Amino acid sequence: MQTTPLKSKVLDVEEDPEALFEDFYARGWTDGLPIIPPTPARVERMIAAGGRPANEVVAILEPRNAPATVEKLAINAVMAGCHPSYFPVLLTIVECMPHSGLDPLGINTTTNPVWLMSVVNGPVRQKLNINSGYGVLGPGWRANATIGRATRLIQLNTAGSIPGEVTKSCQAHPGRYGQCVGEFEERSPWEPLHVERGFKKEESAVTLVAPMSAIRITETDCKTAEGLLHYIAGCMDSPTTAGHPDTHSLLMLCPDHAAILAREGLSKKDVKQELYKRTKAIPLSRWPSELTTGDLKRLGVVGHRPADLGGTTCVHSSPDHFKVIVAGGPSGYHSTWFSLWFHGAEIPTRRIQLPD
Image 1: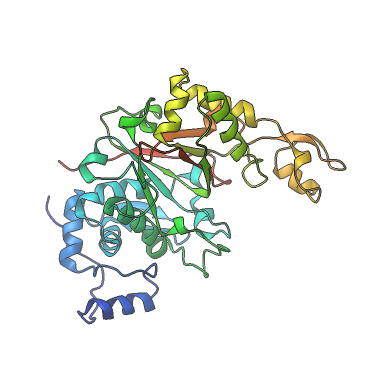
Image 2 (image 1 turned 180 degrees about the vertical axis):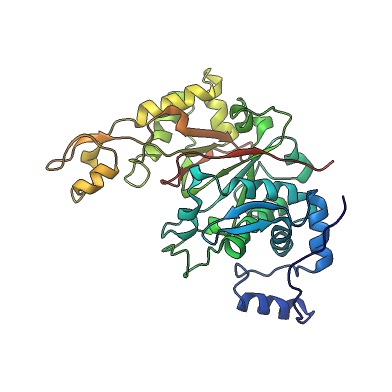
């Protein structure tokens, strides 16, 4: 592919990496962590690995309504420490960012701690060594860490989600440094997420979600589907996570928990249906009496009487709103449930276009 000349301004800065980091930090271009200097040569290598022209606009990102060109994305990818081979995955993530179902403007300006997390499926996981096993949500894997970090830097530098100025997130969340995970398809008893969403198993794809919280599901004693589902549903029962019926959530089951459910013949569809049944009529009586009529309306209350908090609310209005994947180490009974951004109505999945 013929290269397009870079259009970004070349800064005359000190070559010392520490001095350059201090300069970039002072300009507000980093997440507070050290960066790789985005020299023209490094940026050009990143662009070449993406297989697209430098001036191609991948997306228009809010709140700046800024054109996210391949070149601008490559600069952020270099700064984050991405290997050039990761760049096609990052380009696909950015294609998902403007999806109206995510409410990107809200995500980038809210007081909420919401962050972006990408779920990668397909053969590209092995090719790039994207972790889907032990420590999948933690440090130790370059691909997961730097793809996630580059996503956040793009939100900062291109979209304009500047902490404290534009995004007023009250406390934020460590996930805002960036999260990218792979689904452990080899240890899942069910079809992977991208197949469930209409793609072929041999294709590689990214699903972009916006978690607001990560709730641990540590249950080592329940060895029956009934007991485990009861426990998982109980972890979803709170005023924070229930009461937004049109939103979605992501249940990341560890392989051992998934095996317990599958061993008793439950499909992924069955798991969703069972969780829906257990969370579709949560009594408001267990929640504080200070809830106002406005709060009750927000919670999607059915037949409420504000005087005594009669009535019920639910986690989701449909079983299909429970998204389920399998990830984590193949021994240990620890899963995670992510309640997703309550202004989002859908989550996007896109095929990763790998260059020839």
